[in-house]
Image 1 (cartoon, rainbow, N blue to C red):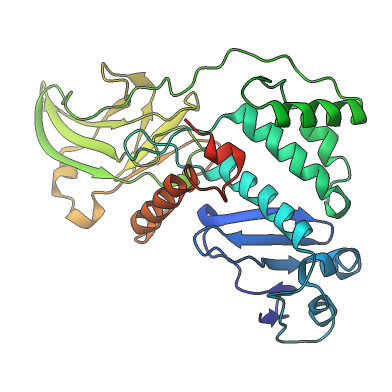
Image 2 (image 1 turned 60 degrees about the horizontal axis):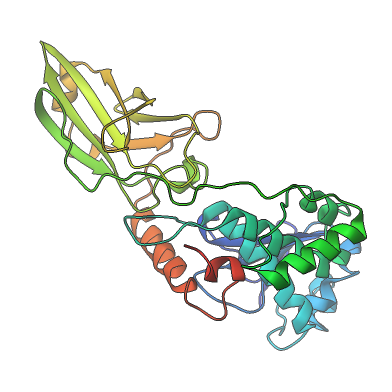
Length: 331
């Protein structure tokens, strides 16, 4: 693995896009796996070599000395403590799933159970507590865990109960949760008035919180002439965790997506000048975003292919024996 020292210590190839990064924050260093690559050994950014030296050898073995020294290349493929490294990988995977899991009825990717995810994460987190950046990470994580159904996941439920007892944390009681109760538009519905232009754009996952919109469904737009005015109509399919305020931008016009149509889609409309009809095709781009969470950005030409790869990856995890319990039991 290559070791770069031009801007701090960077081990290996750091993933380029946030949607593919499974992260774990250790004391003095951050570990990262690219979920689409499948490397066993992570990349790392070391910001405090002295703190990182206490545990980095568990991940990279003897190569840690070269990483924290002057080496430009290290061999860490078979080094380190596999049990610790695998546990770190599992925590990172669950962190990725919590932030980026592409739940989609359109693409057949089931939603994750957040109760199982939080429970599994805190159990695995406790096994690598000694190397975490936050010394209170485990009790803090326990505070967001609720009691599990012992019939569905008896082993996990018992481990969480024992962990909560060890840390003196009272688990919240189980609550009734609504699973996959979100509506999707399979098509149709249409826009009232005379439709002049229509189109669709993928939703950039970095601009909306995870689960707010269907990860695979495009946002649809139409320029409509209605009673002498020109209106932009926008709709997007919701995900399993709707409720975040959304907006869309098209040709410098912002549209609040604050209504729901008969098909369950999040919708909105705003007047636009008639000159919008003269826009060249390359400027007819719609950007959906969550105000206060992210600002509209220039469309990424590689996003569609990357999203498709991540969706395929997530779909494969639901049936993989190597996946986390949370992923295997998604429904």
